[in-house]
Image 1 (cartoon, rainbow, N blue to C red):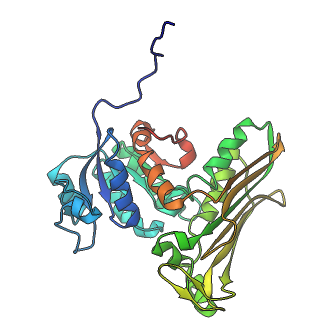
Image 2: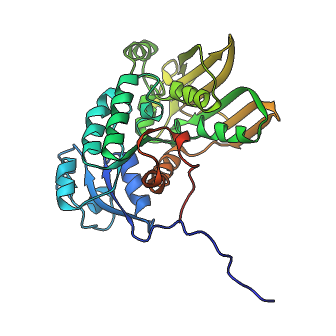
Amino acid sequence: MKQSLIPQRSHVTKEPIPVIVYGLGAIGIGAVKLALQKSYIKIVGAVDVDPSKQGKDLGDVIGGDRLGVTVQPNIQAALAVAPAKVVLHTTTSFMELVEPQLVELINAGLHVVSSTEELSYPHLQSPAIAERLDRLAIDKGVSVLGIGVNPGFLMDLLPLTLTGVCQSVESVEVVRVVDTAKRRVQLQKKTGANLSEAEFRGLMDTGRMGHIGLVESVALIADGLGWPLERIDDEVEPVLAKELTTSEFFQVEAGRVVGLNQVATGWSNGKPRIVLRLHMSLRAENPCDRIRIEGTPPIYLEQPDGVAGDHATVAILINSVHRIVEAKNGLLSPHDLPIPVCRS
């Protein structure tokens, strides 16, 4: 039998894309490790505000072989060593805190892929910041994208993609249940592990408790479907331990917090058209990701055990590097780009 190669369009950049990693917490370190496996990415720099990491070889910081890349205190120092095209930005969740960082990166002429949750749909809570960043990025000829596994994919971009085979859509419901005992300590802290109920509610009043990005996911779905929303409700309640509950990092007595229940609802025409339900707690039962779309045809999709968030967050950051350099300029949302795919 005669065999021949199937001709394919070439999507692989001839030269690796030079990348700087900005922020070397758990996600930043994971991004470095995965980037080293991709031939189309070359890590040329690293930035972190932690003095204990500055001046060290990046390989030492991530616990691997030396890489010949020194961790710098700021982006100017990193660029003085080697030019770059893209920055993988993994610092914090909130727009008002990252705006100065993003302005600095944009002014340096760098494309940005960021894990900042509020950046996934910044027009909702920070419209003035979003407008400033969009104008600056267009002026400087670069693109800025906020993306992650949630927000950025599982509870917004994925259900939006599934509606592509619907003739009409009446409602979207997404349920995500996460056993945080299997996740990094930062997530366990962010979801209230070992707090008293009073401490949890006190932090809720400051706006620094609960999953960041769920209301952005509602807005992103509505924007993609062209649905004007009257309002978005966001309700968060603590989950209390019924008995001693443990993880690698915590021992939580009965009556103290092991996690949270959060529901974000987008209302249109007086109806709850988008409902996102998130349960994250230590030893949560039946972890899963479920999507239900009522429409023509209806769609139901379930992933038992759920998608491993830490691995997925790192993956979608890396899998967005080649997309950001090919994208239009400005401040982008996840649904503004082609769907993310894993490139070898």
